[in-house]
Length: 395
Image 1: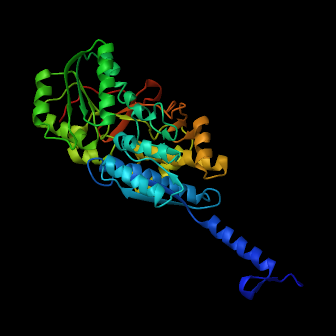
Image 2: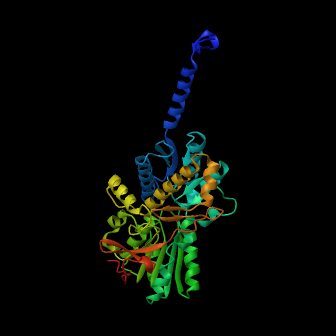
Image 3: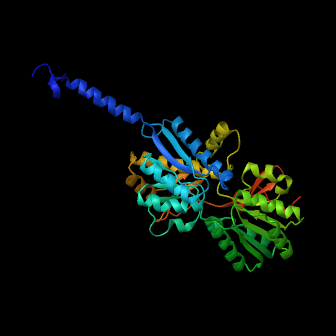
């Protein structure tokens, strides 16, 4: 042989330089392929209003990552499907994302119920998966290794409400809970808390989702005449119960609902009767968390509205995944899992840190109140922007 020419099979000739060039081109082409992030979203069904923010937070996180060059020199691409607020559909879709679409990374679905159904799947396929919609502690128990909680536990939702109300003279309590995994865990925690505080539980019930006509429940609450009503709710039941109480002309001194009031649609749905309703959040615009101001600006630029804590949670999930990918310089799931299990990550929502089974350790809980045309952080005191206004009037 001479001149560096090699004979290929079939009598063709090629140069080693050409072979190297082809190899380089193929490697470069692969490097330019986007990193695909997969998820399911409840675009339809009873969880759709809250889940819309879940999706928007991921979209802003992906856009911000791409604006800064992506990860590993590659852009990000989001691939998602509608799980219809159904756990079984969620399992089918995550199976598709892993086995058919062969996505590079996953972010968990909205709601504890769907996340609880999906968690065994990501453990089976060994996919390191941030779960920004999963507050149920039971998901992150013995046997879990690959799912990571990105919310405070459900048992802490509205935890400041009863102590706050008792300090302001409330004694009689009504606690309601939707028959879903998150809301049942939240409701049981509040029932236990009321007992520990020595408050008088005058009414408690559960209800199905999608929410029923709340007329009979509203009448039962009025008959019990509680000082404080705490509802472990999602958006549609938060709207329905507030409207039902208004129709019969009953307003407790304090009225708190866990999920729903944070969304801009809430006041549009029920009007002035939203005033002085108290609700739960795991994020707030005034928090001095790393990147929070930039997140808010990016969200407003993309969607022309204010974000809520669901959006902040999924944006934080993108931040956490990005930190793991950059630290490990890899998309290898085992490396990402090991890193997430042992490292803290500063996010817009606070500091990500998990237990050996993936349970969130550092994210906080807050209470806010709708006061006229504003939402005001009222608890804990160290973060409060103002004081609680009472009584709730329901007008």
